[in-house]
Image 1: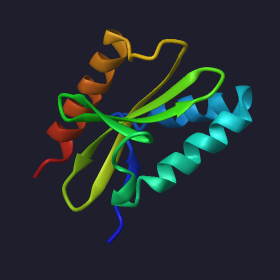
Image 2: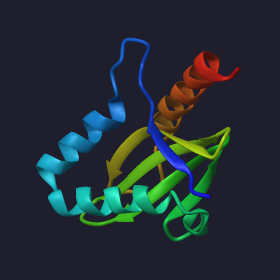
Image 3: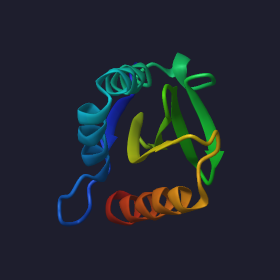
Image 4: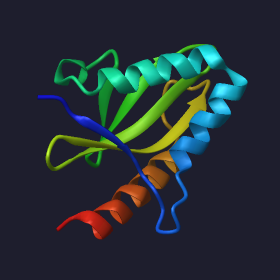
Length: 117
C-alpha cells in the first residue's frame, strides 16, 4: 500500500510549497526534477529513511536533495498513509535553519487544527 503526498495550503488557498517548486523549476530545472522524483519515491515506505529522508524532530521529516544548493522539503505523516509537505528550502548549509523549522511547525499545527478530526 502506497502513501499519498499532499501539499499544505493556507486557509486562503495559497500553497507555499507549490510556489517554492515553481521558483525551483524556473531557477534550476535539474534540481526541480530530482525533488519531484524524491517526492514520488516517498510514496513507497522503503524510502522513508536516509539518504532520501530523515527525521528532524517535532514529528517533522525532511526530503533531502544535494545539488548546487541543498534542497529540502519538510513534511509530516498524517493518518491514512498521507504525507503532508509543508515547506521547501534551499541552502548551502547542511542544517535546516531554525526559522525554517518554525515555519514548517506553524504550518503543521495549522493543518492539524483544521483537518484532525
